[in-house]
Each structure stands twice: as structure tokens, then as C-alpha cells.
Image 1: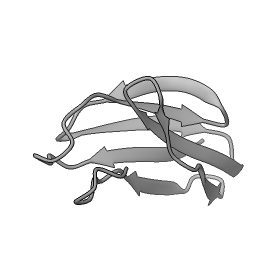
Image 2: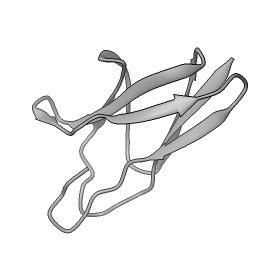
Image 3: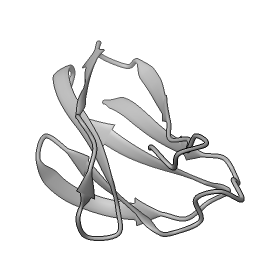
Image 4: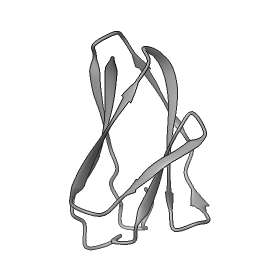
Length: 82
């Protein structure tokens, strides 16, 4: 099985709860300063995050091979983009 890790460093600028979607399915949330891991089938996956209930960001494509681990880092910028 392959694994995608979502990493969210502590950030004073954007501390609201963030929801995680893999392949358009809500799979959980993550607070600032936390990491969360998800097992996925090998292949291409879409990873997206939201801040609160309405702010969706463009999904990124993650292509993962069998047994591979990839990390997606969620950060906020000066203008609170995720």
C-alpha cells in the first residue's frame, strides 16, 4: 500500500481547522502543527484542502507508485492562501 502524508506546520497567520480531500472524498481534517497519514492505492490522486467550509483551493495531482510515500505540505502565506 502507498501512503500520502499531509503536513501542516504551526503557523500563526492561519490557525483555522483545515479539511482534507483525496479524490473528491472528505477524508478528515488537520489542525496547525499536525501531520496526518492516509493509505492509498498506487496511481494518480487529487489532493485538495479547504479552510473552514467554503474556501476551496485548487487540487494538486499526486502520482504515487506501489509502496511509495509522498508528503503534501499545507502552508499559509501572507494573504492566508493555503
